[in-house]
Structures are given as C-alpha cells and as structure tokens.
Amino acid sequence: MVLSFSACINPASAKPYRALSILEQMPNASLAIAGDPQHSLREDKPMIPASTLKVFTALLAFKTWSPNHRFVTDFYLDNAGVLWVKGSGDPFITSEELGQIASTLKKKGLKHINGIGIDSHYFAADIAIDGKSHTLNPYDAPVGALAVNFNTVSIIRNHNKVYSGESQTPSTPLMQKLADRVPNGHHRINLGEQSLGDRYFAELLQAKLQKQGIKTADLIKNGHLPASGKLFYSHKNSHTLNQIVEEMLEHSNNFIANQLFLMMGAERYGSPANISKSQQAAAEKIRTMFGWNQKIFHEGSGLSHKNQLSANQFIAVLEKFAPYKSLLKSQGGNILAKTGTLTGVSSYAGYVRKAKKWTPFALFINQPVQNQFRKQLAQELLGLKSVKG
Image 1 (cartoon, rainbow, N blue to C red):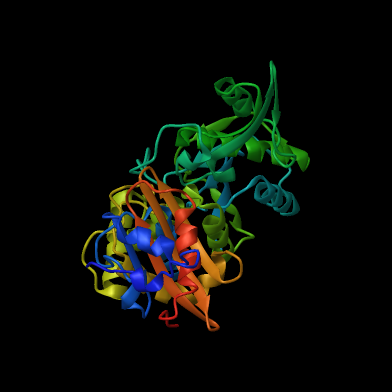
Image 2: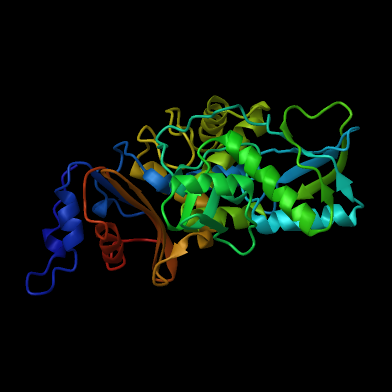
C-alpha cells in the first residue's frame, strides 16, 4: 500500500504531519488507526510488537480471571513442624506482602517452626523465555511458582559492607552472596535462576517471621509438600489482578507478564505450568475471541522477536481492551498508550482522544528509528481530522 501525505503538509508551516510523511518512507513500518483507513500504512503486515504485547497479555488475563481476582499462596505445617509454602505463581508478592503474611501467621497462632519448606512444582523447572538474556538486569528476571520482589534484589555495596537497598527488605545471606556480582554502589539485579528465587523467598519469609517474634530454625528445604502437611493459612494477595496489570503496564514488567502468561496455561491445562501449555491456551482464546489461527504468542512480555501480529489485529485487541484503557499510561491527557522497544524495534499502541472519543491506534516500526519518533507521530494523530471515534 503506497500513500502520499503531501496534502497534509503545509510548506509554509512547520510541517505538522512530518512524522507521518517520514513513516511512509519506512519499508518496515506499519500504522493502523481505528475507522481511518486513509492514514493507515501496511496495516495488515505481520510485525514484532515488543512490549506493546503486554496489553494483549493483560486482555487474555482478564478473560481468564476477573479484574478483582486475587492470587493465592498456601502455607502448610507438617508433622516435623516445618512451615511449607506451596506457590501457584503469584506475580506480586513483595517484601510488604510477606510482612502481612507473617503478621497473619502470628495472629493465627504460629509461635515457632522447625524450618521452611518450598514447594515450587506448580511451574516446570528452568522455564526458558524466548528473547530473555542472561544479564543482571531486572527485566531478565527468571520466572517461578514462588517469587518475591519480582525475583530481584536491591543491594547497596560499600567495599566490604553490604546493605539492603530497601527499608522494607531485610538483608539476607543470599543478598550478601549476590553482592559479589556488583561493584560499589546501589544496584537492583535479578536472581539469575529460579532455585535462587526459592531460596530468597524462604530467607525473606524467615526474617519477616522473626520480626513478628516467631522462632524459626535455620532449615530451608525444597521438595514436594509432605503427605503430613496440613493447610494452616491460605493467603490472598492484597492486590487485585486489575492493580497488578496496572503495575505491569506502567513499569513494563516482563516478570509479571510472563508469570501471568504461564499461569494462564496452568489454569487451562493444569500444572506444571510451561510455555507450551500457555501458547496453546493463548491460541485457543485468540481463536474464540478473534477467529485468528496463526501463532502470535511465543511468550507474554514482548521480549521475543518471534511474537508477530499486524497493526490491524492490534486495533481489534485494543477495541476489546477499551474497558481497561485507563490502566495505560497517560501522555498529556489525550493519549493513553504503551511503548515497546527491542533492538531494531519501536512500537506504540493505545488510544488518542479526539472530539471526546478515544480512538485506538497501533504503530509498529521494525527498523532503527529515533526513540521520540513514535510519540511525535502520536501527537500528529491528534491533529488528523479524518480520525473517527
């Protein structure tokens, strides 16, 4: 499809639609605006969406659970006095949430334990996320059935002294060990592998229990919940799915996105959660909702270059996501949108507000471009008279 935007440009002015004109010359770029084919460009070409895919992941999550759903983590006591934690993927257990859990356990009569057991078998072991790198960056955090603080740790290192970078998070032995990976300064790093995620969860829980005056032995073990284990407390997260999705979209949290993606697969096909089950569950919902048969999701965060869909398809997604559009970040009051960035990929999708109506748009650029270009183009969309709500 070849378009000309010359009619939009006034040479005597500051070329108000300059970004649209530049976009037309990009061979690996596409644009779709709901109800406005005049200004659409290669709108049916499959493209890499990067992190805008999180909007689609959020939509599938809302079709799996209600916005008010709260994820559950169960706590058991066995005959040996070990407190077992059986995870089911809750993506939003933080230090503060662990503090609430410890307080509730005390109120329910827990006075001492002989150790902490971790049962993380709800997820398959060593799940590989396509596109995830092996760096210390938080966005490369591993996934797992049990995780605290998004499988990341905040560390302050001052030569041979190591401190927690958060007042709500006590220092633990694993934190001290992980500090060997970083130079002096304040850092947030991911835990690298889920086995360390399990360990960190147990150490932080142990510290929070001790703060409540609950005596805890140093024993930490991994395994299946023993037959003697009896349910002591079932914790519902203080955050709803709606709140978790809002945090995921605002901070573009890859960990939350892939936790939700994996949990959707286990919800449909049973545990252990794995990528294959989640891909099947996503494909099934997409066929039901849109009638599309191609494989769109390779993972849920947008890290993979294998994720592909067209701008027109994303418009259809945004139309169904409209009841939740307020969860997207506001850009000056007239744009609600999510960005996406990978090497050689720049995307932007959401809604522009014209004549008191919100109009979906999707911009995918699969070639190098200046970072601010996509937002400049979105501003131009606000001035297009042919955009319809």
